[in-house]
Image (cartoon, rainbow, N blue to C red; front, side, top):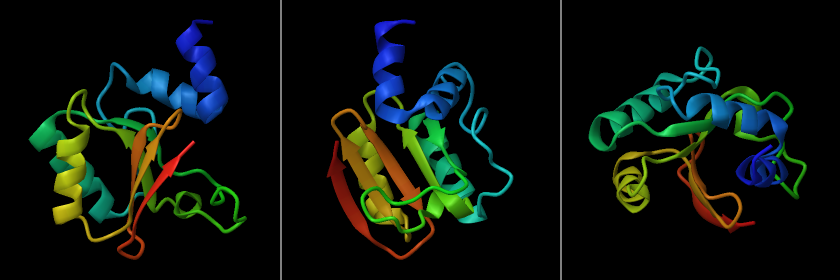
Length: 130
């Protein structure tokens, strides 16, 4: 395994690495389940793709997912959240656009988990560094 794959395995877990590596050369949604996503999230990703280029979807539906450190059920568990990497060099622009246009939750992650999270829950904003 490459060094990148090993780092990704430790950072995201095996299932997310499979989703990530499968989606690198394919359009958004190709590797992550999309049929259960609400229209508002599909629309947000579609608009991001049209305005900035194709994001790399890391995860959508994760049955049994919980919010780290709380034990509370994550919106990923009910297919109401998406984690993704924006197109290269577009992180700040995508985030600014989401803050102006997305009415659900927006989370940013830095460190080993460098991605953006959106969901259709309450309008909340947060940042985590892992």
